[in-house]
Length: 141
Image (tube, rainbow, N blue to C red; front, top):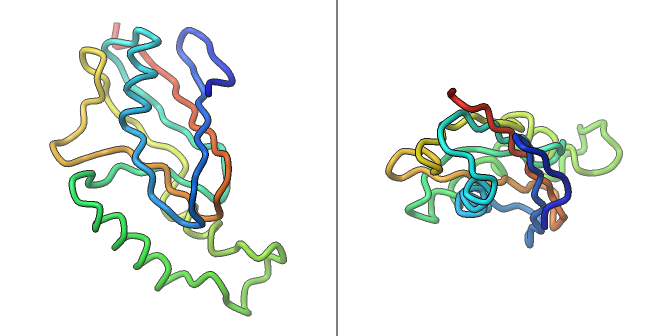
């Protein structure tokens, strides 16, 4: 569901289904690129949340996403009595800070110009929730 739009900006909403997950969003982003008519330029992908992130990672083998979540959980446990943040989701904030809330990708011919095995993922660390992904397009010409 689209909640905000302009010529070079759009915002889409996504409902995550798990507490922690890497959700592939490349196809959803490409549909927005085509809907907007964006052809050649730079795409800025931004997630306006402090307990979610966005990353580019392998999209061919789902075990890669499982391994990433496993390692993040191992080094950043959900429960740790040393956390000072009282909401109980400090681990989600730390994971988000490590992965980051934005990325850039080229668009060529109306398509994401990713590597052979790459995909764009929304990283949920405190779900399930409704999340937003903001897309800003900067044309090359």
